[in-house]
Structure formats: C-alpha cells, structure tokens
Image (cartoon, rainbow, N blue to C red):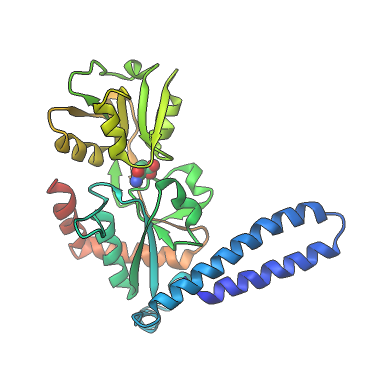
Length: 300
Ligand code: GLN
C-alpha cells in the first residue's frame, strides 16, 4: 500500500470535483459519482497512513524489491504486502492456538512475500468483504477464493494454484444422495461463496448464510439445516472434526463443476500480477509448494 497513490487519488478526485462543478450538463451524475469516490479516497488515505506508520520501522524491503525487479507495483512500494483473508476455512486459513491466521494460503503468501522481498501483513475479515476491500484496505486476497466471471469484473486473479470442488456435508444418517434430493432443502453456506451461489440456484431451496463455516456445520448437527455446501478440503476437515455426526460427499455426485483457487488483486495492476505469478512459479519449481501441500493439506 502506498501513501503516494492515495494522495494522487485524492488530488484526482478533487480535480474531478472541480471539473464537475464547471459542467452543468452532467453535474448531477458527476456529483453523485464523485461523492462516493471521494469517500473511498478518504478511506484509502487513512489506511495508507496507518499502514505506513505501523510498518515504517520494520519494513526493510522496498529498496531490496527495487533491486530484485525492474518494475515495482505501487502496492508494494512501502515494502508491505497486505493480504486479506477469512480465517474460517481450514486447512487454507484458520486461527491457530496463538490467535494468528495460519494455514496453506497464509504460508503461501508468506513464501510469495519472501520471494518479492516484502513484509506480509494479514488482515482477517469477512469473506464477503474481501473483493471490495482489494486496492483500499488490502493489497490482495488469499482465501481459497474461486476464480469466477463475476469476481473478474472487479478484480484480477493470478494463475490458479489449487483445484477444488464444492462438497455436500450431511448428517451421518441423511438420505440426500443426488442433485434432485437437494431441491426444496434448507442449505447452510458461507456468505458470498460459490457454495452460496450454487445453493441459491437449487430449486425451492432455503439458503442459510453464515459468516463462519463451522456455525453452518453446528446448525447441521442441531438439525437447523439439511446440508451444508462448502469446498472439498474444509468439508473433509469438518468431517473428521465431527466424526460420526456428519459425512462429506463429493460434489461431483451432485453435478457440481470443478473450481480453481487463485489470489485476487487490484484490477489492472499488471506489474503486481506478473510479480506474484513469477513468485508462484518459483515456489512451485523449488519444491516449496509441494511442501506446503504436504504440511497443510495432506496432513489433514
Ligand atoms: N472457494 C469458495 C469461494 O471462493 C469459498 C472460499 C471461502 O469460503 N474462503 O467462494
């Protein structure tokens, strides 16, 4: 995150405002847009200031980064990569015993930060807020996030790093076994996820949205929902956590399509995109990626 960018934005917004005042034809529209935009700019400035203060002392990396590569993304110019996640999605992200966000994605972004020579700061937030926070509160999001066309309208994605599919978590004695059985059911999901979108499309479904996946699974056990639709690996974690009470069934059995996880970043920041893709490639080539899969995913 960089102060300069925020200041430049504010200046640009002010200029837009001045221009808007001078033109009567589009005044109404421009004023509306500008009001929203300048709020955004003010927020951006605040976040950028905070980040700069917090990290000034311990951010050694900006110069190193400049040495390592020709172009430096504005987002990394202060030596800090601020990564948004929702640490409710084991094994990709969860809060560990020390209260820190940990998991596969967290280890992956730290490895990326190392390759880029920047400090990684994690911001834990609601999954549904991640996409809209990219470019203001956070630089990028790493959250087992599936690449979708809708999200691509607001953010760009790196090359994908993991294949997933939605699973259906059921009570151990459930008779639900195929797509048609899901019709008319009460379905628990994590708010704003691909599981949520799938559930909404099922005929006559009632969708219960949760911020934390574990709350959906608890409601499944309590009989408040008939099933939970969630990504494969978290589903398997919950199956073993609540062994004997729930089972996790492969979404292929319900005709769910495979999905790809990628890191989301500001739309149009091709410098950052190239840097992260290059780092990802190195991490795969040098064996780090496979190590992380073994440690975080296969160990589950
Ligand atoms: N892969 C799903 C999505 O992108 C869920 C991600 C999550 O809950 N962290 O919507």
